[in-house]
Image (tube, rainbow, N blue to C red; front, side):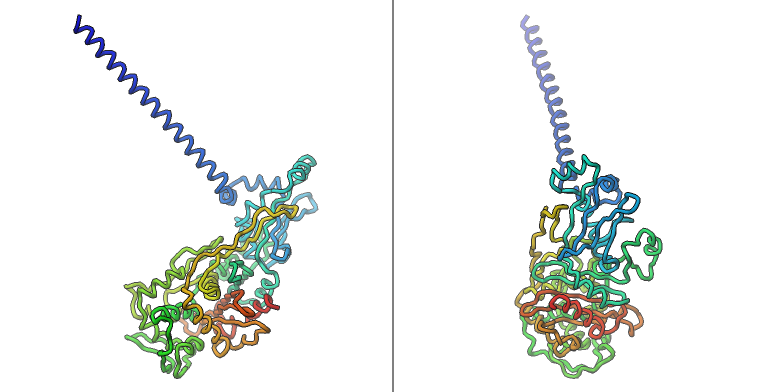
Length: 487
């Protein structure tokens, strides 16, 4: 009797344990599915709210076509309210996209067909979203009229854009300008260009033209040897290694410099004679800067390049080419000398050169570049505004004063003297002539600089492919852009 009761108790205990284990398993599975469900909700919410703009902008998303059928695509405006892109109705009751300035804003405004480009692509979601007054939206829906998408107000200055476009004439290259205090992109010109009104009809020709690449925005996606504009970086490294002191430096330029079997020649083999540090920069003496490069610390130089965002992502809201430079511990003497004068394996985009220049002009601080200032609904009401923000300090302000003074001397008595007459404002800058092939007589023409009446206000960077002398070709183009801003 005792054994049976004991056995019964054991059976009940075992059954109880099985029941508890079963409940635990059911509970675990239940909570697991609840957890998965919650994760899916968070994931869905993230993509429909936080990432909705990216999802809609994807060219494979068919919802774009649906939105286009229900809405009139919003306008793109300049900083002064000039219409850069709008949607008009045709004679058949349909709509088409119109670009009143045709080629002038082609690359930065872009087009809304064949994959979309420029601001049309960046703000595709915005342009296909209507935040107008609910009463007017309902009224339009009831009457069968399409609602108007939101308008995108840009930072682009029409006068500066036209000045840059006209100054470039039929040359290949790019011009880009920026407000150094705010980060506003003021103009973006790339050539060869195209008429966005005719993209549909000429798409095959434009897309297959590999020689001219008219659809390529060279201002952001171009990648070029910087030539002597890079001497800004080399000069900065020298200043850092010598605590900002340059008075003891001197060099006798005979037109070339040889070091450990490597030979560096001055542009057009010019002999500059005896030059100090500032003269070397103002006259863009390759021999002197090769001499300077032979003395600097590789690791320190590598750190400076990293601080200036070489081989790094840039804080830009649009697609761009990453700049590259390699003077690590494994680099040769020739690599170091070539890098010091902006040749060799160093490449940079015009927008990156502009950012470095802007930081120098702004006491070492880079402002985050942006091209969209605010979003408005069809009634003119402001939906959102872009906040001016600092990216960070690229250059210790201890050295920016010296760099600004040196860049001013380039214009006063150096390679950019032809742009000295500045009509009430001062230009500072650096020219460059960058070799890009085995033919040493061919070079890209560069100019990068800033200007202001008292303090620097805007920066401009120009590159002309195969243009030759930066002082003779690129600097005058920049001057016309400066004039458009200040006059």
